[in-house]
Image (cartoon, rainbow, N blue to C red):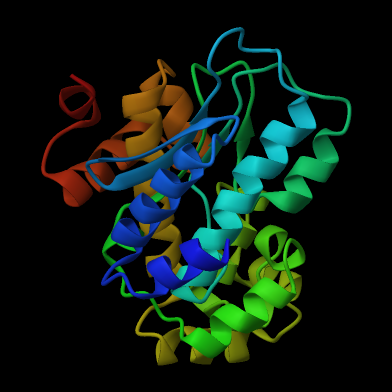
Length: 252
């Protein structure tokens, strides 16, 4: 990991750093094939098993996926919220533990095992020094599995809260209480980051809508309801504002 670490912190962007890291994993005969890809507004890191899909102990697969999320979060300096966490396996009996590990909605029996997040993360500058790397390596694998939340921007904390709760019903006061602060403090801290509760929620709604339209066959009415829109016309108006086209056209 030391060699990979120096290679990553020397990279100009997170995307290039991850490319270097995954290449080294394959050279070391890592048990999974790691694929980093970008599709429109989303990026994903997928783990593919050669041979029989279920031959690996499933916990090893889950921890490997979390480690990749942890390394990516460490590179940018905050815990990256995930638009989707997909597993190509049935739900395990310890599903609650996975919700603790991954800051995003978790799906099972999917086509791939992967995490999906905002594609702009790949273009972010690597924010780590040699001293950061030495500290990170001294704490492995703990910091691979849990990036300290104190370093996480409040915008990301709000997104994570919305992802882990119900974006359709959570109100601003609910979010503030979940983050153990007053609504006024939450609004001020978001303003310092150049955003608002409404803008953060709308952007997450957009990301989730785009993801489900391109990655699932869910009915548009179901997506609109899950995202908290009162009716289909409201969802259509919002979607046109986001993309310039109606949901059906975007899906095609």
